[in-house]
Length: 311
Ligand code: ACO
Image 1 (tube, rainbow, N blue to C red):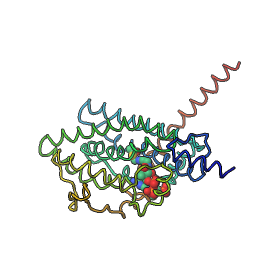
Image 2: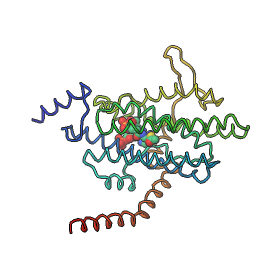
Image 3: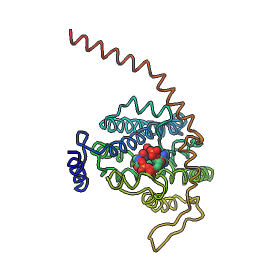
Image 4: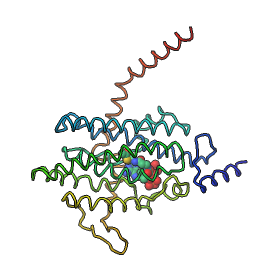
């Protein structure tokens, strides 16, 4: 029976038929999805922190309102993704416990500090730009609930990216000091953004199998290359200099050659030793603990109502 189930699964993958929660799936497929989707959810939630840091300091009421709603969108994405992961048989409590204990990973990018207002522009433009590059193909990922969640997430991310680009445009068209702020933020965020795509294909343990199962549609290096090719003209349009002395157009491959990411820095951040890792986790744990009374009150209220309805 196991064999015919596996054949049916493989056939669906080959025919581009989505795998749904109640379908049979190999244990390793389930595990890979729980890993990737929960990491993705955690990234959205932790990703609220660097930007949340600027809500009270955004330079105008309009900027505050936009940033506030963007950060709320990220919360929505996180909840959406936790729900998608739950369809695979894991619980939200377990996933959150794993984040708080340091067992679960989340994107390295959110462990860097936001030092100036220009960082908010750079995050929207670069980080959300990278997120879109990575997530639009996930609309075609083989697991149904994850693919469907990505549709809405990507629409909102596109808006986020444009708001980031627009902040960068304002700064780049502003006073020399503003232009300088934009360039400095670009310098800070460029390399960490390239790290978002993950290790090189040759050093990525999960890519091969995930490509075969059509969980991933492109490899880490393919997406990183596409991202560079998309961003360089945008940087030129803004009048910013890409902080990479090895960046060079390569006519033959119809794309840019670019320098190597500092992989030591990448793994250091992934292992929990980046500039803000500890702060990010402590903030999440504190928020969770301080929110205990809300969870208890909501539960007590629900129980009271259920008891009243039963009576
Ligand atoms: N930050 C932290 N950890 C990372 C990163 C990163 N930028 N890139 C890779 N890793 C981890 C992987 O999770 C994996 O860890 P694990 O095996 O212990 O779980 C390990 O490094 C090796 O990497 P890969 O084999 O390449 O892992 P994978 O095939 O999962 O590819 C990728 C990584 C591209 C991030 C993939 O998981 C993915 O596409 N995820 C969905 C998108 C996502 O999570 N985006 C989050 C940032 S965008 C945002 O939230 C706004």
